[in-house]
Image (cartoon, rainbow, N blue to C red; front, side, top):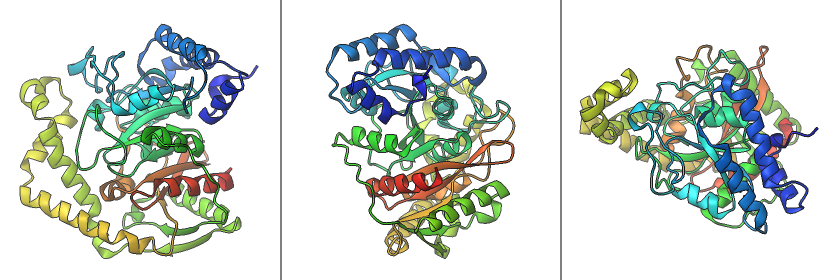
Amino acid sequence: MEILSNLTASDAIERIRQKQITSEALVESCLEKIDAREHEIGAWQHIDAVHALAQARDRDKESAQGMLHGIPVAVKDIIETHDMPTAYGSSLYKGYRSPWDAACIAACRDAGAVILGKTVTTEFAYFHPGKTSNPHNMTHTPGGSSSGSAAAVSDGMVPIAFGSQTAGSVIRPASFCGVVGYKGTYGLFSMAGIKPFANSLDTLGVFTRKVADAALMHAVLLRIPLDGKPITSPPRIGRCNTHEWPQADIATRDALDEAVNYWRAAGAEVVDISLPDSFKDLATSQLTIMTFESARTFAFEYNFHADKLSKHMKKIVEDGRAITELAYSKAKALANECRRELPALFSDHDILVAPSSLGAAPQGLDTTGDPLFNRIWTLLGVPCVNLPGYRTTNGLPVGVQIIGLPGNDKNLLDVATWLEAQLA
């Protein structure tokens, strides 16, 4: 018997419109998968089957007009939902319920989505892990901070899930869990109703099983028509190992080599490029900015409820308060300087390709892995997509990261669709 929860969102939408399946049947299949696997994976912070099925039945009573009509969507638990609690991964906010929806949730509801539930996040979307395991090996981390979202999509519990990225919280868990992760251009999607961490960096993202579904979410969030046109010629790719390349392990090196070989064989032009010397301190600058801003973001929690914060959260606030305004300003000035150099990097390339993570998901659930290969791209505000495909000898996935110019998300997703087809 077909398992409907394994459908991509795009396939499910078409079948709902053709009345081949119902939203209720799709949501029931997702709930069955959650019932069967949640005790092992631990992807969900809040799930209410009765409420989810009620939403699905309402969708089935309506004509299928919205771009997400009847499709279940999971929500990282730092994103406000008026009908579900939002705890931000912290005991401090256990049971808190917002009176309103975040802008991204309102857009999904307007598009006809079923908000299935809230997925586990690390504490305040930082490094203190939640309960989630990697579906490919339960003794390994799923990454973070969007741990539950990446794991739920990977395990077939839901076709689409929201994440957010301040350092590497979309691309890294997407790489570790073997799914598509898309982080939009900084500022492209509204962050209204999403718990901030560092305002200069926080960016909305999504997890899906196919690039087409990420492109669908791009359209939904911008409230524009879906205009997916396949590219007519193989792309021009700049292979960019970055200044951090010496820290990549063999799995990441092999994943990048394998992907490039497939794309070259399909006709893509791939040229090795080097980042300017000015980029070598960007990863450190990202950490400086994130730490400085987080100390201001979490001043209330630290001042009044430090006893309920993990050692990770207390340390970043304390470290952030020790950073001078001059150091912060210098880090931001470097970021602005490097952003001005981006057009030259893309002058002869449609996209850049770089590592998504240091390697496969580390063993153990007391860490979420290192976001080193994501820091510079988050700081530069560029759109990024993790493409899965490579697997290590022990079955753990490792992705590759493709990068576009700021504001050029549509082109990046179009190229990603072509690249994905070659890897398949």
